Amino acid sequence: MSISSAINAARSGLQVTSLRADTVATNVANAGTAGYVRRSISISESITGGQTTGVRSSGYVRAGNEAVSAERRSSLSDLSQSKILSTTWSSISTRVGDTADGGQLFKAFSEFETTLADAAQTPESTTHAASVLASANKVISEFNQLSLLAVDLRREADTEIGAGVDALNLALKNVEDLNGRIAASKPGSSANAALIDERQRELDTIAEYVPIQTAERHAGTIDVLTTEGVFLVAGAARKVEFSPSSAFGPEHTVGNGLLSGLTVDGLDITPGADTFGAISSGVLGALFQVRDEDAPGFSAQLDTLANDLVTRLSADSIDSTKTPGEQGFFVDSDPAAGAGIAARLQINAAIDPNQGGELRRLRDGIGSATAGPTGSTTILNNLSAAFTNVQPLNASGLNGSFSSTETIAHFSSIIGQTRISRDAVLTSSTTQYDALTQAEQSETGVDIDAQMQDLIFIEQAYAANARVIEVASQLMDILMEL
Image (cartoon, rainbow, N blue to C red; front, side, top):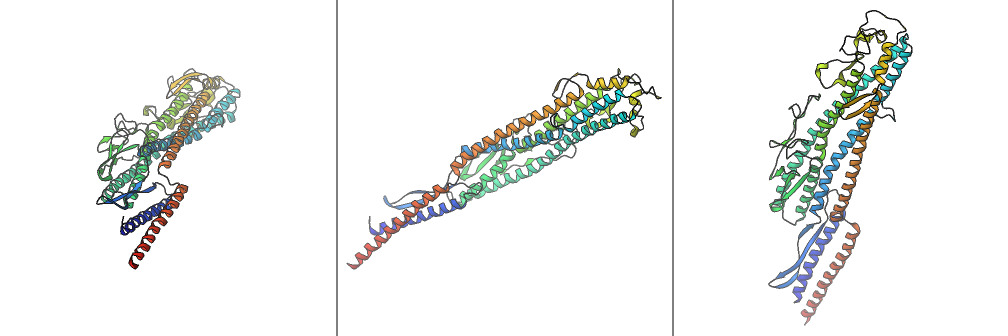
């Protein structure tokens, strides 16, 4: 090798070493940047005319393992879903309470049972009769408020679905734009690597809402599909369609068209739908489950409990003055309306002074025209017995034989068990996601200690190449003196 060749080789070494130093500096500076993937310089021997002429860089290399990243994104979809379901059921459980902490519905039933028994002991007491009416109103208030909670959960979920779809469409459009910029950039360049990092962050945003997979295309571009195989980005981004709703009664469902589903180019991807494209998890999967399954199921259980209460205290054997078949102490204000009785529960107007009734009918009978003996306990005892008698119940997931108060305890227990189940899924999902995140970080993250060690080698290489140039220069000076 000639002296000039040695100088050129060392100069190429200095150039590559400078790039390596710049890369280390960039890695260290972005060690805490979310979504940043560690870079390195790809180095190869430079050969001209069959002779080695030094070293050259063929560009930046992004660290990573796409299989691990894809699995981590899938876990992110599951984690996003479990967070929403856990939060939802925690809210429901807190509101309903349980027998241990004395939830408001359980307290209301217990108080009604107590005041009814007290009134049966002293039928002449208007104070005890008024207490029965007051405790009954608390029961009704709890049913009404819990029914509104179910409606609010559906409304909030629907609103969040709309916001989520907007965020999803924006992220899909961003991926389309980034694909174009990546294809136009130089492969292996710093700009190319930065654009791919940015696209990875957009993919993470998408994965929060729906579970996805990717397919590589030409010039570094990718297509994005749901895990079920529906294209979200195929060259161009496809728009996910959803129409927010304003009413959320028991009759409002996706099946009858009163609530919006989720579509892509006319293809139904609504979570829970009987189609191949139905989304299985993610934020949207959770929100649709809350809106269309969990909240309606909770509402149906409230209706079952309210109907049981009406039915128990409407038995013809309780009150001989009542027209056979008519409702008793508690009534459904619109029986023909079907589902939604918990929101329509009322006290029979005949015994409610606020509705023009007479409180004495609690003792004398709903159909009594005149006051009866003040010491009569028959109807009050019958009401108390009907409330405390153990009767079978088998509807909306409430199965067994219970007294009225026991049905509430059973209901609270089911709510609590569901919350615990959702919390357990969240814990499992979090553990899995954290493990996959750590696995991905070990592949793509910046280890400061390792970078500092690389920097020492870079410094040594730079000094060595500079020394070669210095020695070659001295040799050239000697030759010039000859």
